[in-house]
Length: 474
Image 1 (tube, one colour):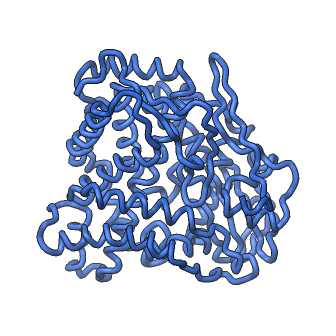
Image 2 (spheres, one colour; image 1 turned 90 degrees about the horizontal axis):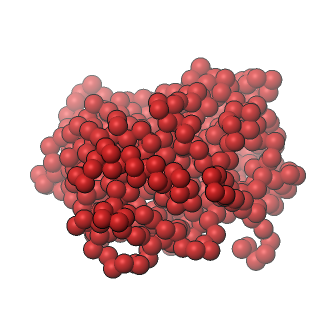
């Protein structure tokens, strides 16, 4: 890669009869130079992390003219994300520049007054109190997807990330937007985001040379096409609602109605598209990645898979998995939570300091990049027992982690609005498919987790599926 100028870190994976250490890049032992940092960021944002950062604490260093502060201890995470939220609410210029062509000023990257008045609206759409409204559609889509797998010839292979994206895109389209996303539109959405993520530059040189807002992202033909694919799908949803074909009570319906509410600024067409695009991408991409990693972990841990099958059979029997079954699917939930620990879909939560501050014993400069990393925090050697092992039992039987040590959905005021939606969706989909199938990664395939915008297996995860004995019902 890069004409041999950059060599990615070695990927570590190890397993035995009763343990599995899933794939992760070997931590760097020496500080990378600027050349390695720039090319490494193009490959993966988690590939150049130092060994001593897999330990709680606060650390500061410089990249060119810019101060970088890594915050990796629960008390200081709380300080940044809650106590001093107003000083650190602004996302990094890299993230804002990278995502703006797709989602404009959508909730994920907005701040200030825009975020303040839109957040309650969006949060209300996917609030946990609305989950009973979403349940029938979630169940129906998951069942239909399982029937599609049952119709495949035995031994059929496919790339799992794309399959999971199809499933979650259909769920987000029907439950949140109230419209059945056609096959072609679903592929445009999924392929558009995947193509954009591959081509986007995750290192904004201008920011590290002193430009507090970074340099504008140059959109070449490939990025423009990718963004246009996403916008075409979202615009189609909006057009349907404006023409009276949308469902009452859907997210877009609620946002459109808000335009007539004089209590806040008017949400124009651009704002509607930005928030709709944000919900599409956040709602399908992160859960698709989560499910892909869960299948990889389960396939390499037969003792975990066996316990999963026993639980599903006991709770659901031969009948379809229902949302009402979720409280009893404790092991399934534990698997999803442990997957979120090891492979948080958003492994880096960068913030830009509004004003100078002090975090622990580190003086923080105005405009500094303050980096909170679920990837590092979830693997800190002094915060977790055997942090690189896959151990769902950490979360079984109601087990919980410190809310500032386990932050896959962020924490504080900017906690993911769709937390409950995404968690229930992942558990339901995993249980529905695991009830009937085993997912088998291709023998010899080398899994490498890489992050550009979200955390995915490099090159995807090729798999075949096998019906469980007596469980492959149509």
